Length: 286
Image (tube, rainbow, N blue to C red; front, side, top):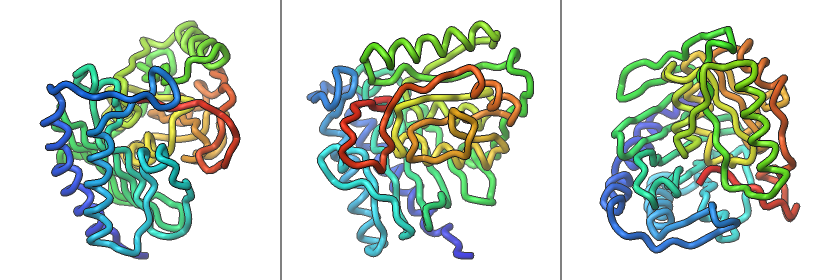
């Protein structure tokens, strides 16, 4: 089995370098453009950071492939192949970034044969580096991470997001899902505005579960392996095997908690990330 540690270390290095660009722009005025909805934003910094990351990786590993949020938004075809592939979200939490709400992350995942080998989530303002390598455990700033192991849904804090979708079906489904969870009951529902950092809270044990419908592979590919390597469980919202292209995910402290959430929440229709020309406008956390 190939050892991708050098790639992991390089990814960590460039994530830290790119975070300096994010932080230098954090307090500044931003020119904001809309993508799919008034809640789906992009700034020049999103685009600049993605170019910095891809350029650095391409110079070091010219044969590797890329899936980047802003590249796809600009029309690049999204395809996950068996080739070594870097999946990049240059700023996860762009709305937070625009409003200076201090949860903004760079997310980088690396896949080979369509299987994630490592994930990096750098929460820039917090200066928190989450990372994990397949079979090697999960870490926060070098310290091992462990999910809570909680089995009882009534003792859980659950993290989720409303997301950028604003049509009636999506909104009613998302709000009714929160109502169902609160009626189980759970201890509480939280949202930080960045899917990558949200999910990493499960890896730290600070939250016991995370779920979302409508995000994209670049939002959750890195944090999914971080949760798994911290001892957590990741699956589809219907209880089936996790598929990063499905745009549905539950990450939890235990299979019991994940299964209980899957029993009560519903998904609204949204296209797979790797489905072409489906006409679906659902978008993830921005």
